[in-house]
Length: 490
Image (cartoon, rainbow, N blue to C red; front, side, top):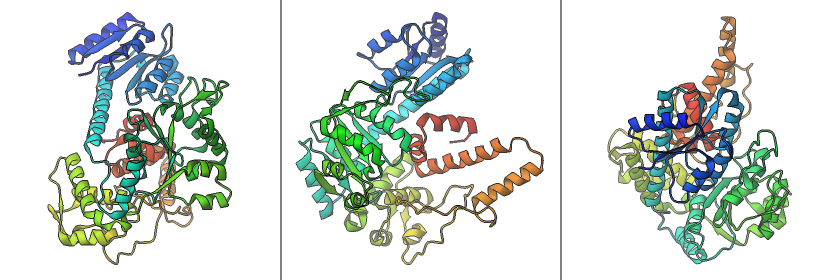
């Protein structure tokens, strides 16, 4: 078992934590300064790092940035005095797992370290399981063409553009290209350029210097630096803001860039793989995508077919997803009858492979018997099914039907005067609370709203917090903190 590392210049703090963790049977290793701890990383690594925020010779925030650059998945707990809570906010922004205010309650500190340890073990288990799963499945001629292309490109560093519909597995192709390339031992860093707010995307890509903007209390490496020596996967590149496209073109041209707020040029040896579900030629004609960047990215184009063009792969994919869901849930895998398999094979899957995966997980939970018959399949795949008109109503219970991966059209804002929609329900709730004289209406309704968003995202991602946070557009530490604050039983 890896150790819990504690970094604090206060001997009494180190002593207390050492004894408390030892009583819990947890190995611990202590350091009086950040320098010694960083040197120890050359030979070993912790399972959890607990660090003070203020130490001679280097702050905990600086240590956090350096550790995260080397071990991005390591849970880091920052200890801080009550007067340092503003710094604790910066710690969360820098990727801290949690902060521990001083003076702390010892049982609470041990419980927090236990939780960080469980998170570390869970992520390690997911990575190990992912390593054992076949990269991609497919016997269809269209997929065999993709596999052959990956093989031909395996020893090349050429830029690749992957096109395909949402949910078709573009990131899997990018990971395969990376794994089988000369850079396979280097990092694979993925970023969805459509999922990050425009104002933050530049910092995400290129990093920032301390003081570059409000809240930037420590320097931060961007994705280009993180991917040095490896591969950077730019998903949904067609949605990148136009002004950032110029900066990206410069990096692709000469490998040089500047951090936000920086004055010294940085260099990064990165292979770029881009992906999009959009027609970039149309985006160029519309004037929202640079033509020179298009040609720079479009060196080799690899088209990933939608699932409806490879129907013969549905049976093997369904068996794989049912087996995986059963393993995750700790149950016996469900089996599709021939008739049920025929229904699935004839379905067009607008959400592609991701939608099939969601359906298989739904069946693992909801199907009444071990053998799945056509009547047990969700409504959306039944022949002749017509979806009900879309609504903006927010329910208080998890959605019973699996979700398609295809993006839904934006719904029109609900009118509070029409008496329909979740906004009207919220207005009625607020009106009743205000009429009753409640004084915490804002907090109460905000908590209900946040809780419903988090529960829905966790339902879709089968409890995977990191993926749920990504889908919601918030940080991993934010979702963890919110779950605690809201008292969610997840």
